[in-house]
Length: 410
Image (cartoon, rainbow, N blue to C red; front, top):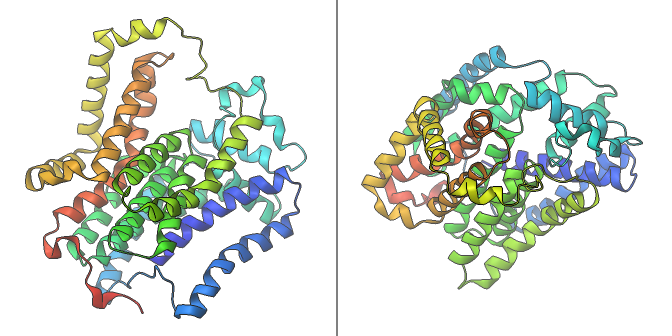
């Protein structure tokens, strides 16, 4: 379980440090040194003090489990390779990879922030483009192999994280089930293979809830800080990540208001991601098309138009039934079996996120039918793995979700 968390932290650090290296005109060699030394400065003292990380998680028990995981990943990889686009689908080609090409050139990277490229959404955060540009700088030239590798790693990271996180609580059947659900899910593979940033958002949201589970089980202050950092890092992947971070942070602070030290550590972890995003939005990013569209009085007519409500409901129903029916069945069973789930932090976070999406669609300046068709499946994709993890974890019967303490690495 340490490996998916380490992967998330590494991806986030590269995304931030590459942006800062462009901002402060830092050489690529010095950037590499920082990427190595910054994690080491946190890990080495912990290793020396405790002979193991404070948030160390258990190994997957049994070679059979790992063999099944390997088979599931093999199936996923074979199906993924058939869906993978050379330069990505339209959004990847016109937005994420295009931005990476600007970031590849330190002298000219800020040229992307122009009204002439408004169709490429230069206001979008830069984690995925920074990761691709960082790897291009490492090999010395622009190649489609790099975004293809990034897409592959992120795609595999999601089911691996699900498997290890569920297996941690001895949910062996659920862990295996989760891997094969994603390995056989054509929609999940299609979105991941298109090289969008949506699967990267889904991965960070999933890791956020995995770490939140660790906090609930009494992990130390390092995990709380890390939780804030990972949750905050969703803001650097896509604009939708900002909604998630705001909603999750408000819910986390509300549920921990009696433990102010926990809330402070969480906010401290999320401080750097938020400051970097704020600097990017203020210093470089142009106006967002949804927020600054000059709608004015049109918003009221949109809100009172019943046809818009019906169209949104129709798209949500059709998309959910077509692509996420397994999750709907699991969530229905969860609500029937454990109604207390409706008062938990995860349910509140997801309910508020969906409400936020609803408001955006209701007031969008774009053609509503087109907007829903172009983005709703990917918005649901953001929360799909995390919902799958939480539903399977709670529906599993043994120990009520408590840790089997002998499994800890010490």
